[in-house]
Image (spheres, one colour):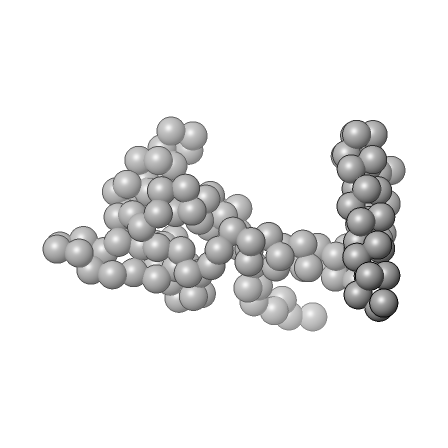
Length: 133
């Protein structure tokens, strides 16, 4: 079966988006320098990846003087929503409950986080009851 193009982000694209979310609009060189602290990349590589993100509609660019400045067109919240939805669909056949159970079973959630999650679920239930009244 042919692979369909993903509207998600590759690991490197995500790293670049994190830089843009943190710094705001940035030139290629600024993104390269920030990435270089953890992962040195050639200027051309960063430029190519920013152009890929531009084609995907994940960033936009403006020309300022003699350089392009790239800014996120996708918010962090939108990226998280897409990634979680994709994970739930692909790995858990659409069941977000199975995702949460998996996190608990694999000890990815501490007992404190499970309690917090239970409190959030309870608050949501009460909110739903009030809306019906």
